[in-house]
Amino acid sequence: MREMQAMVYAQRNRKHLLVKAPPASGKSRAMMFVALDKLANQGVKKVIVAVPQQNIGRSFKDTPLKKFGFFADWNVVPYWNLCMAAGSENTKKSVVREFLDHPKATCLVCTHATLLNALNGVDARKLDNVFFGIDEFHHGSADENNRLGTLIRRLLNETSAHILAMTGSYFRGDAVPVMRPEDEAMFQPTINYNYYQQLNGYKWLKSLGIGYAFFQGNYLTAIPDVLDTTKKTLIHIPYPNSKTGAFMNKHDQVAEIIKYIGEIVERDYDNYLYKVKTADGRILTVGDLVEDKAGCRSALQAYLHRMNRREALDILIALGTAKEGFDWEWCEHCITIGIRASLTEVVQIIGRCTRDCEGKIHAQFTNLIPCPDAAQDDVSMAVNDFLKAISASLLMEQVMAPKWNFKTKMDDEERPKMPKPSGEKKHEIVVKGLPALNEKTKAIVENDLDTLVATTLSDKNIREAIIGEGMTELITEVYIPKIIRETYPGLTEDEVDAVAKHTILTIATQGEQVIGPDDSGNKFIKIANKFVNIDDLDINLISEINPFQRAYEIISKSLTPEVLRTIHYVIEDKRSEKLTDEEAILLFTKYLPKWREENPGKEKPELTDGDPLARRIAKAIEHLRQLKRNKLRQQ
Image (cartoon, rainbow, N blue to C red):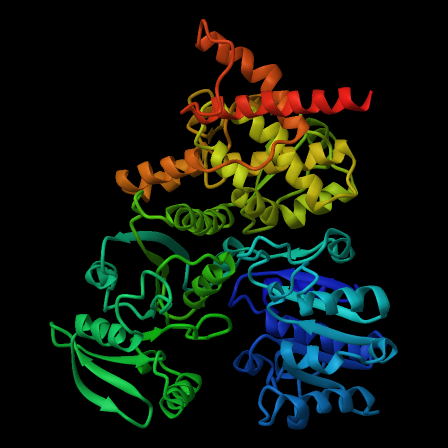
């Protein structure tokens, strides 16, 4: 087993498992291992694997495992593999119900849609002791109208079913949680495996780059700047109804991109491929998945499924396909044109180029997006979506960095001195004032920290606060604890504080390496542009440093001055969410006196003030006035 698969298999006896791991990390086979053990050793009678699309179901075709040392092979009778079978949804619905009643049938593979249709109205008792493997779990959500989310809640609360939920991106573009807190608690602790761990275990691929390129007017003019025809490249053109793609129909866009690549010298009609001669004389194989004709698309898809050599394809152009579950191990560069509102979609596309293969040492994701214009009516939405995409890139930056383990002085004194395992790349730092972790908070810190960081980076209040001066205390004492309370409603205030401190430390140190030792033998770490002696690292110091400062600098380095000015203008102009009582009190008691010192002769800031901190203080004053009025009315 790979490292991630062994991590999952070690937890195989748990009834509810949630696995968060990047694309290409081996999640499908991990599910096979667990499912087979459930059938053989845990009293489970049937296994149902559900995937979002039929083509992803190929990951669960018959797989020989015994020759690698496992006790059984993964086999699915063709009749029960509904991702490989033809037929209507009504027919497949009947097959699923037949499977549940069949005394000898053990394994079935189908799509999410088929499963939802088939189980609607089925007696919950038929689902007892059934193992459900839900692939690409982020398709579910806590929204009451989400059918997959509703099914999961039903399985958790009305049956004795076992569940293994897997996803490469445990967040959604619509900002709705994947699971409700009380349901997610039943999956704790989760199994997290990040990009850094994955790349560290690869033989060939060792680095992943995430970049943003900007264009004005027609995106086709920027294609020569971002397309390197010597790299195996997957290009996703913009959606036809988007501003980026509305200037020309999708087929003409593909034709123009091919013109930039070179001249078509041959057409392979059997496989729907183009042979394109570049300016320097190379012949490239180009595929067009944008084509609407069913026969052409099917021919190319069949070719993509059976290709088994690097030379089989050089460039693939797609629109709504070749994202989730698409396997092209030689892909080195993903170019996505246009703003993607969904963080999940961005991460899934990135996963297309992160499979390990011989000769590929670096993978690159490039988002080619329009340079915002402050005069546009929709600039607010465009910049908001753009910041979501940046948050996704920062998440990759965070999980690509070596993992820092923070411990209290007490931990350091009580822990026995054990030799580090060979090859271990974790770094430990003793932090003064860091609250001790109990079993509950330790499980969160060890398993869910990446998700918390992602949620924090995507929070609207924090994204606005990182641009303002003097906002550190508001971020560290209000916003981050608030996120943790909402994510884990069962925590006490002391537990919230402990998890918050670890989250803040992780953000503050992300991507930074230990610098040193210096002449005196002391090691230093760089946090938010400050060199700090590790022995002096404490919570008070962290609270004085904006942990997002370095993250914002990463954003700034990727932008032109024009775009930065536009983003700054839009964020200042946007109305903030309603303040909480806690936020308002902190702003009034600590930030208003500071503002008065810096603005002698002025009593209070106005809601129209150009400074974002001043506007927040003004809103806090109004908020507290309203609270006082409400209290007087009640007396």
